[in-house]
Figure 1 (spheres, rainbow, N blue to C red):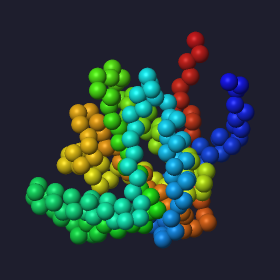
Figure 2 (cartoon, rainbow, N blue to C red):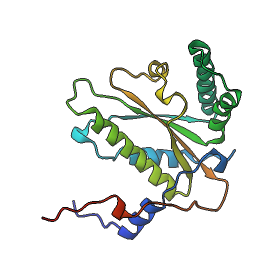
Figure 3 (cartoon, helix red, strand yellow):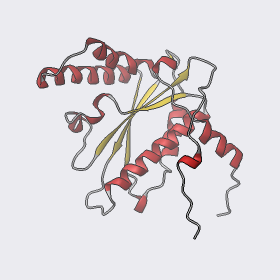
Length: 202
């Protein structure tokens, strides 16, 4: 196979231009075409994976599926509060019910371990996160609003069975995708590279 003719300027542009955008910035009732979501998932499939374990799994919610997910997390929040005796906040409950319905699609992100694999859990988490980054970059290239949420049932033990998780499997959050409500693209901010890098030359 010949070396691909990559365009480094475009690569730099999409990586440095990627942004997170949230439900308040979503254009509602104007769904993203499924073909774009499928392209995002296909690009996720090409993330690096040690020993090709490909531990990522995705569940896509759209249409009435968004309401199903919204009700699921809202009801679980209420049930957890009742069971654990923790404060129930009505505004949080309503947010759980409303925020998902503002998206076009929500993609649940799962890390599923291969039985008996010698690959460290950290590596499986890392390559699943790289798969999500590929989705992020693809969404940005299409000018879409997107963000990776680790709220709601992400760390709720009760959700593990519902998502078919066992052992060291993990629910790693939810990727929200929608069209933008505004033509403006958020500014980015990062600290100087000098603050993050040390060079060893001898």
